[in-house]
Image (cartoon, rainbow, N blue to C red; front, side, top):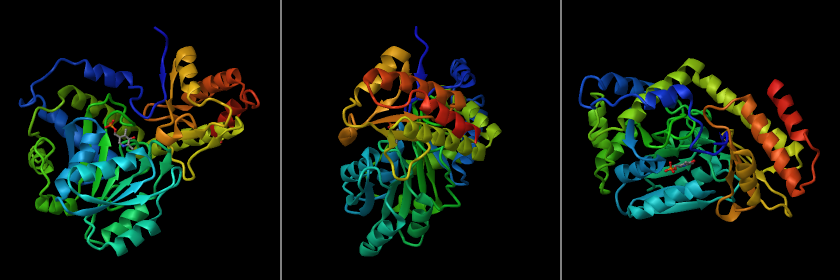
Length: 377
Ligand SMILES: *Cc1c(COP(=O)(O)O)cnc(C)c1O
């Protein structure tokens, strides 16, 4: 089998220590054996989320936590603000509609971030809004949103703030409590360095009050039931035992490195990728780029859909292409979780070979040199 390199915004390369934990024999989840693991996992999550709020874990992908946030805090007929500047922002609109919640949609040009002023204006114009749904790093465009300023504004109203940090958690700075974010949702298969299968939701006191009023239907994804059980480090239904044991290991790796250092490492790698892209006669798509995933604009005349295929088939490198309106127009490279300086050289080196093969005009090796300079700055 060829050596493979994953540069996708989930799933990501999983460190060997975490893989070993996944291979441990199963233990019963209602037995005393499991409780210390779940306790450690929950403490680890609070550290990674930077919160004292309960963090609920569901067996499901990140979208399960998004769905839980909508279904548990709102009632049919409620109104909520959503931001459509990419595919994942659109998911909030779709989820609201699925539960009979009326979305007030702020349409943002792809590549740009919604501004705190735009949110403030929408809230002033719609004082009955019950929730504001945001995306910290919009994975389809590589855009970072100023969630800190926006949640400060939302905190002054009766609405709750809900932040999709599925691709951002443990990669991009996020201070759940200090920024007054009521609900943060995340998933296991991104910077948490785990396989897919766990979804997380942190829930503030304000969000818990909203949960008490909510009339949307829910059963498996009931946050009230999960929070009650969580007080005893227990779950309403069978937890994903192996994934939770692996989470304990991954969270410890993050804690040992220090969350600020983890954010700084992602910032370094993201900057190196962006500088390499520019040096290769390409450009960065996002105006306010995140460090999680770098969307690189592909010039006309170069087939952007072919680049990921050549990278995969010739070099064993998996990156993501563009979605929807960006199909063929951008490539997306993620350096998420267990990624380091050498990974940047690997992906930029493979991109150099691929772009040369495709006839793109650029100075050979310039991307690698720019990355080297950025990484030693
Ligand atoms: C990956 C991702 C999700 C969740 O997707 P799942 O496939 O359900 O895990 C949600 N939002 C963002 C921004 C993402 O990057």
